[in-house]
Image 1: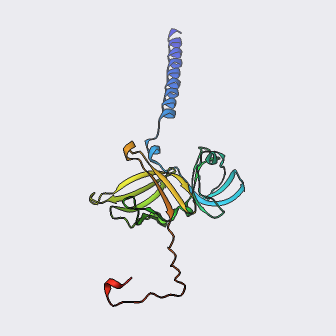
Image 2: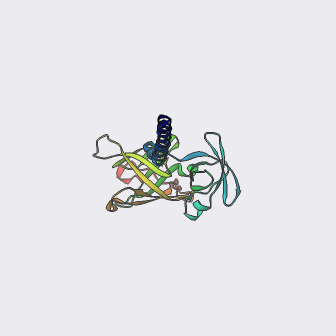
Image 3: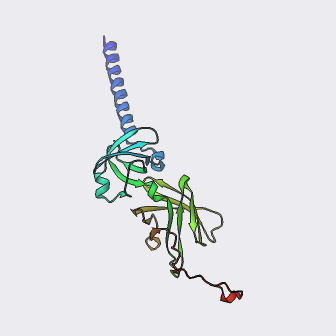
Length: 227
């Protein structure tokens, strides 16, 4: 009889320890952070499928899902980057439930040639060409060669090669502050304070040909007289 009682107590104790162990294990698993999650791009990409109201946006993702997102928070935080119309390609950051947009970037507006006066003398325009397929190119720049771009977790990531840096690529991250049909403004992220900079671009426009009111410039044989 005593042996039976002892065995019963032992079994109960083992069950309690087992349950307790599973509980602690579950707590550890719940508290564990996936390291890969820290380097995963959580940006959603897709097309604007509709704008039911001023605070609601429908996005048809690249995976075929249709999300109805409240954009009030993005509007409040000035993270609606670029005016949007149906059919525009978007990069969107959302909450975990994918019911609220925290940032919306109009990729269609981001593409193109962006220039600003050369900081050295202001006589020429320099800048960046943002192309489809993640290709980036430099515009009239000799010290920096842009290579690629992408949106990564709502940030603009650009790779480039600097003059004198060999062939090793440099990757920089930027926060987009403003995006419109004719303006692109972004600032560096993750740099020492003395290396932070804000770049303000305007969309490149072909310079109009001057109106000479019917006059024609004469051609001269003397190369010093040619205009």
